[in-house]
Image (cartoon, rainbow, N blue to C red; front, side, top):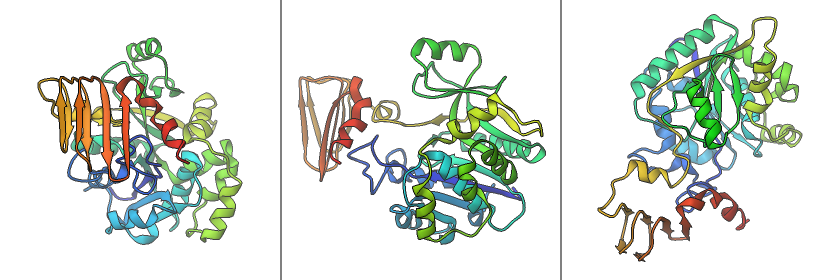
Amino acid sequence: MKGLKAVILAGGSGERFWPLSTPDRPKQFLSVFGSESLLRQTISRLGGLVAADDVFVVTSSRLAPATRRELPEVPRNNIAGEPARRDTAAAVALGVGLAARDGGDPVIAFFPSDHLVAKPAKFRATLRRAAAAARKTRKIAVVGIVPSCNSSAFGYVDPATARFVEKPDSATAAKYVKAGFLWNAGMFIGRASVFREAFKAHAPELSTLAAPAKAPSARKLARIYAALPRISFDYAVMEKISRRPARNGNGITVLPGDFGWDDVGSFLSFDKYFPHDKDGNVREGPCALVESRNNICVSRSARIALVGVSNLVVVSTPGAVLIADKSSISGLKKAVSMFG
């Protein structure tokens, strides 16, 4: 699509799929859910809509070299490395400045780098509609995912009011789904000028990053980031716009998306995408299971034997071993942080 640019947010820290993922090789680099990495899949499904020269990636400075190796068709200077983790608000602002550096007022689409899309043709059709809406108005288009269940794992957005709500409990999630709310998948599309105006109005400390300019030097970028808050784009900008739409017409429009989207946010996703044996176990690699049910067993190094256990996640790599109860897998981040 002429004038459409895509920014991929790829600053993951490698915690949710540890030890398969690590800080030096986080989730977006894993080729677990298909033959291509999640990052490569993110780029591939933009084919036919966005040229490689119009794809930009915001990652961490540590991951920039690996990202360039993974995406050799994307120009080197289209990949920016953040010097510090400041969540998605800073990443979006930097992406706006990067994608609009040559002037004009392009439509910019932002996507996470580590999600699955089972129906890429439907995804592209939704992106076309969102880009058309963003081009014709001074609103940021949000692609909300039509829920497949009453999940408390995602934030929600109300398409009627464009109100964003955080991850709810199960009972509240059921009410949201019944009311027609959509999952917030972190997909935002808008004109560069609209993003810049939104930052100026609601997060002025990020306006410098959003200004159209050549990529600043690493030293200058480090100085800028040192003074920035750690805050998500939802909190810093989108929730404020939904509460106080601008008089000049700037606001939010929500489009439903139903293209087989999945966050694949933990090892529990293996139960959804991998075959099971007769006892409900998922196995990858040399795993021997005896009188064991409903386990996820992944070996990338030593052989694993499970005897008389159920509902575990067991993963071995050359450098680490994970053993977790499925019901407690959400505590993985805390465990990984203990290693420093």
